[in-house]
Image 1 (cartoon, rainbow, N blue to C red):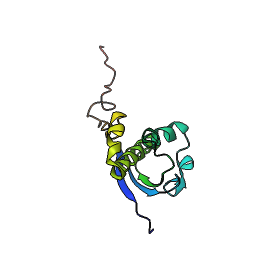
Image 2 (cartoon, rainbow, N blue to C red; image 1 turned 135 degrees about the horizontal axis):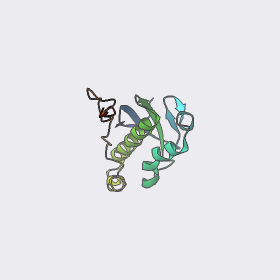
Image 3 (cartoon, rainbow, N blue to C red; image 1 turned 90 degrees about the vertical axis):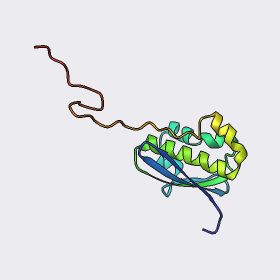
Image 4 (cartoon, rainbow, N blue to C red; image 1 turned 120 degrees about the vertical axis):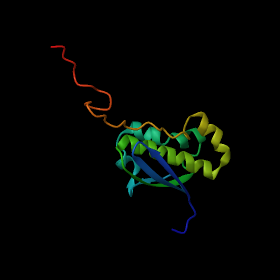
Length: 130
C-alpha cells in the first residue's frame, strides 16, 4: 500500500491488536473481515468505536486491524486501546479528551493463576468438620 498510515498496538488480557489508521471514508476491517461481521455483538462495536465518537473523528479514517489471542471481548477492548493510541499519534490535542474518558489507560486486569490445593485461583474445596 502506498498510502501513509499511523500504527499503534492495543492489548487487553491475552488479546493483542495492531491498528492502522489511513486517511479515508471510515471503513473498518478486522482480520480481513468487515467490523460487523467480526464483532457480531453491537455492544462490542459500540465500545470499540468510542475513541472515534468522543473525538469527533468518525468517518475521517479507514482502519485496518490485525487482532489475535484472547476472546471476543478482550479483542474488542484491545482494538479500542489501539485506536485511541493511533488517534493521539495523528493529533496530540486529542490526548486530554481520550484521557478524560479513560481510553488511553491499559486495563491491566488478567486471569489470576491457579494455586495448589485450590479448585481455581481462590476457590477452596468445601470444608468438612466430620
